[in-house]
Image 1 (cartoon, rainbow, N blue to C red):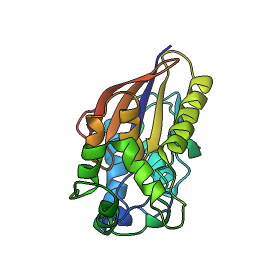
Image 2 (image 1 turned 135 degrees about the vertical axis):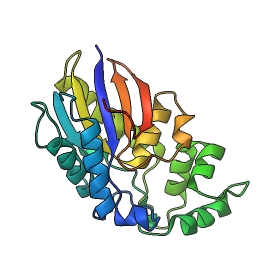
Image 3 (image 1 turned 120 degrees about the vertical axis):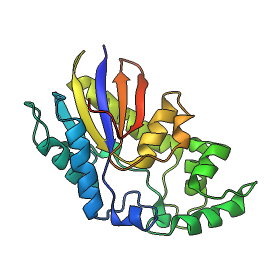
Length: 221
């Protein structure tokens, strides 16, 4: 069995614009974010989706609706919400400037990292998630194992709902997409920040997935 997934990062939000960790918190799409979503929809307009999904966070739902509004096939017009594909829960770090947060977390690692991406490159996605969890003063941030389990549950739901040859849309989040690439053996891709509206194409099988393309904002599928 192989299901083709077009996983899209939501459009730009005000937290993205002001470089703040967002996580399970929600900020609305900016004007550019709405454009990001429509442009992604135009690139995917000829793909006949057998299912359309988004995380249950508003920025992902709205992005999915804008993408589907551009579709020229008999694809669904409304996304099904799957909480399993939410962004990582950054706990009490949500809403805080990303550089302030990295500076704080640098107190618990060596060497010192210049930004979030450098930290992921240095110690890996799994360790960074656990770093947020271990040093959240309010103990709200999720660890890697919790994140891994919920995302794998989301993929299992997709496997149960679809059959070989289906094409599906999933609108998710930047860190979630990077971590999924890492999860399926592409830690090199996880080093890269995902652009708003970019597409990661996956081939989902019975047991795993293969990353076909990543961070794509150019291809008309």
